[in-house]
Length: 277
Image (cartoon, rainbow, N blue to C red; front, side):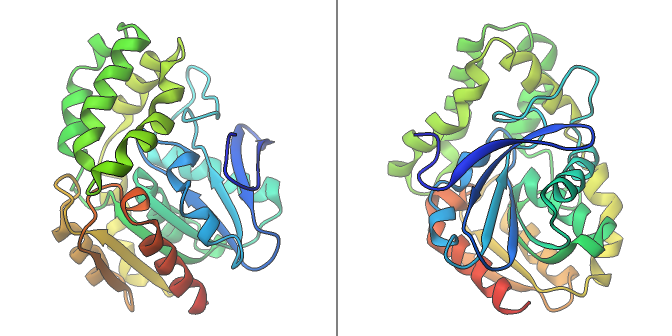
């Protein structure tokens, strides 16, 4: 089964095709945005906790999961944000609550500041921000992209599995989650596509929007895994301080992948944001 509930569909936008997991029939609209190297399945245990409270749209960003990214198409954070605005248009959604993890947290910040008329509220969980990324594990892979793109997909899958395993606070949850994350990269085009994403990883995008975070006038929840040694806790503190009225919640037993370690905590943060709309 592709998803535990709801359905997935490939949505045609003005310039792209984006795979979306849809769940929930009523309530405010939520756009869930994953990071690298994950996909809509990052939210496997979060969406079931939200689908009675909102209409949930968990997207595969360009070149992730089941969303294609033809050669020459930008996959940087700004391009991803622009593609998601097109997705909102295609879905007929005027305003949404955005929920972002990792790179998705950076995309959420771009949307909230540069497309503020489309964003009603925001939740960021261990998201990239300021100059705090690429994180060490991504930086190491980025340095090797010329070699990585020529590797067989089996080698890339093995590399990803080894790199991802330490990023969970609850190791018993890691194997199944990693299976869901790495499956798309095992395709023949996986290595070259991953290399494109790594090359595009640049903090210039979050540094550009950082001065505008203080102007946000929407409910914001920052939900941060205290054990994260990649996007370290100090960045969660700084992000929350930079946004007026933002609430910061520490998840003491979670590492980087909070939506896997503690899906209940992420869902609770989203519900708090919804309650403030």
